[in-house]
Image (cartoon, rainbow, N blue to C red; front, top):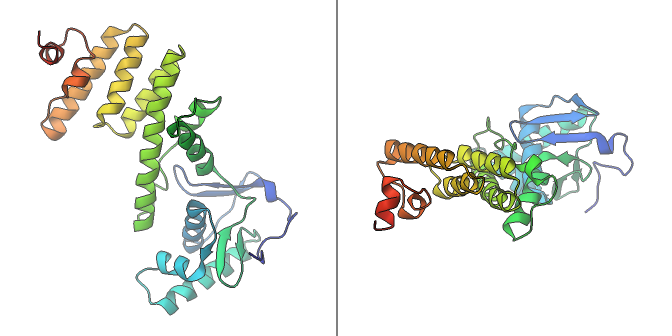
Length: 250
C-alpha cells in the first residue's frame, strides 16, 4: 500500500503515543495533542483494527447513521483536520487507510501479552506490571463497534489475569498472585473462575482466613445480584464452610 500520509524518517516518528486504555489520549514527545472528536474516533478505530481498512468500510462504520456520500464526506473532513494538526498519523492510498506503523498504542502491549498467556505460554517478566493495572478500553465511547471491542478486550484481560494468578502462585510469588486475582475479581465480580483462583492463591500462601473471607464476599454478591449459591466446586475449596461440608457430603 502506498504511504501517501507518512514518510520514513518523519521527525518524531518514535515519539507518538496513542492511549486507548482508560480513555483516549494522543501525545507527541510527551505533550498532549488535541484532535477533533471525529479524528479521535478515526484514530481509535484504525488502532483497534490494526490493519489496512477500506475507506468506504471505515466511513460506513464510523458514520453508520449517515448516507454513504455523507459518511465519505465526514471521513475526508476528519482526515483533513487531522492533517492540519501537523502529525501525519495515518497511512493512506486511494482505497485504504491504516494507522501509521510508528505510532505506539498502549492496547497492543497488553493484548499481545494476554494472548501469549491464553495460548499456553509461561508468564514473562513485565506481564504482571502490564496486565494488572490496565484500564477499560475507551470507557467514555459508546459506539456499537467500541462496545464490542471493549467486551472482547475485557474477556481477554480477565482470562489472562486468572492465568497470571495461577502461575504466580505456583512460582511462590504470592503477593502478586493475590493482586492478579483481585484485579480479575474487580473486573468481573460475578465471575466464579476469578474468585476460585483468588481463593486458591490465598490458600497456597497459607491464609485460610483470607480464603474464607473471599468466599463469603463472593457468596454475598452472588446471592444479592442473582439469588444464587456458589457452586459445590468453589465451596469445596474452603475447608470448614457450611457449603463445603455439603459439597463433600459430610
